[in-house]
Amino acid sequence: MLEQPVALVTGGSRGIGRGICVELARSGFAVCINYQGNERAARETQRLCDAVAHPHGLGSDICQADVGQAADRERLVQATLDRWQRLDVLVNNAGITSIGRLDILEATEESWDKVLGINLKGAFFLTQRVAWEMTRLTQSPPPNFQPTIVNISSVSAYALSTNRGDYCISKAGLSLATQLWALRLADFGIRVYEVRPGIIETDMTAAGKDKYDHLFTEGLTPIRRWGTPADVGKAVAALVTGALPYCTGEVINVDGGYHLRPFPR
Ligand code: NAP
View 1 (cartoon, rainbow, N blue to C red):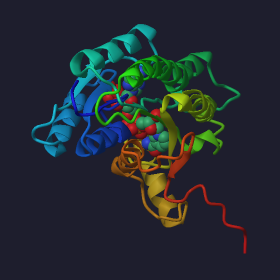
View 2: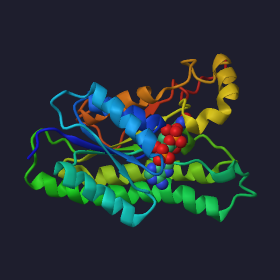
View 3: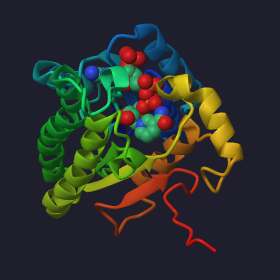
View 4: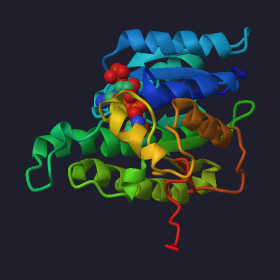
């Protein structure tokens, strides 16, 4: 059995997922970088991971799969196991925003099915599949085995956008799913966490760049700047390297303090 722990990160090709992959590679993980369509970006993440990884480590690899599709999820898990024979960490990061960002009075079932299918159903059933694998591995654990699952939700799990209803619902659902899995898997020694990013500078938020630049100077977040993919990656790395050994089902806000609610003075 290989000694190096292995992490599978969905949507690892760009943005927050890339930040997570790099921080996990830096923390000693071999990383399976999942992507949906952008192979070039996935290769760039792989290059960045290899640049920070231990020189005698197992390296990282990329794997195309649409997490919204059952057959793809199965292929993704199998590819990871075929390559490394173990799976220590799953990060459910892949996600899309609402198609067309329509007001909920106009929202379409097409967007609902797509957003919920990737952001919530995909994460839920990939967790289910990986949980079986992790429980099997706990029978005869490989060295340094600390099975952990991290769901990347959003402040949209509680902050309401009426032009992205399906997205908000997908993230609120993912938050609840985190608690369900944390409860169910605790007996197997598998910890499950929710990391809740605020406004992070990625392709997903690029269209709102000017608006948010202004809002940060106005104090939208107590820490007045954009979040970065590395900010989220460092939080995930802390969790999966055992920084919170007696915690499960916990929410870690990576949002510059956005969730704080000052009482009016
Ligand atoms: P992004 O820049 O748009 O990147 C999305 C990533 O997800 C890409 O790697 C993409 O792969 C992958 N992806 C999309 N659909 C997929 C599918 N069906 N199967 C597998 N992979 C898929 O987004 P981001 O801003 O980094 O967001 C990452 C996660 O953080 C999402 O869950 C998002 O909801 C959440 N989040 C983001 C923010 C923010 O401010 N940016 C805030 C809170 C939460 P390809 O490159 O192949 O297309």
